[in-house]
Image: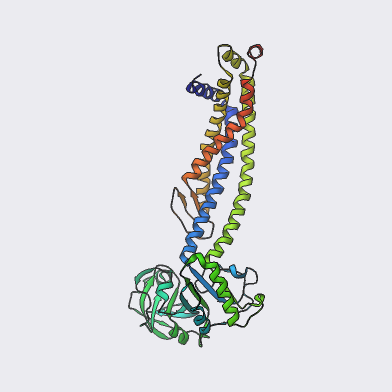
Length: 421
């Protein structure tokens, strides 16, 4: 019997048992939709994580005062912003110019940026806002920063009372904007605006000037030190070396008594990725239960179809149909149930992802696109590979569930089958 004929017969069986078949298909739809939704949310979270960490610079190591007892050195914090752990056990500023000089002698270190920060009032025209003011080393800032300019330029070594403003504060706090080369007042001192960043709600000024403007910023102490690596593949070894050198510089022997934290985006990415993988596996196991229920439904439908079509099977065998032809017909029938359920599940899963995104005020990407919206893990991504995989998996589930009923149908004795009522 030709495959096309077998397909027509299997389709006929499906069409003449609509209610039972569609109840079974609904079970497959729910299972596939759950899998698609979970996988799309997981993939979206992964892309969002990569996008966010990319803005911090994967080749940047951050050193901050205090040691996080809860999260250890994997915590990502510091003056550059990012993920924060629990409060440090030590709050004093203990990073100095001596530490910066010592770090310059470590292999694989390309640039070192010491920073201090504080909050001061910034006044433009008649409007005043309290901003985070960051003092940076102008000789290396433009080489190590991951910030993007909207207009103007970065601070350079020749700048004194110059400032670069975050784009968000310019557009939201100062609704009319702040033009380049305008004069603003920070801490009672006049500054010239030389650049505006694409994002950010703070302001950057030269380090020496910041020590005069910010309270408790005198001396040679730093709030954080950022280190850019030459070779990112050696980040773990470099972190170890930096930790050992700083412990030696600070006179610390017991590692549990460290008074600083060394961290990088890659270490945090690994930690979050492990958590995401565990959560995805757990949610995937829950979704698999729906698929198992759907598979049982397919098997039940196929057994019922075999009982209902026993006489027809006997007739087909009597006129020359072989065992493999009967088995092919019922396997194709179960595959069709799985395929229809897979298509419905993919569509439902996509709309479910869209609903989740809309509820959270975020975006859903189909076949590409990376969104980095509000909270972490709040974006979804439905890839072509996920769609194809879901369809193939649903067909496979259908065929596996229908394999035993199809085999039993193929082994029916024609004489016994013709006697059945």
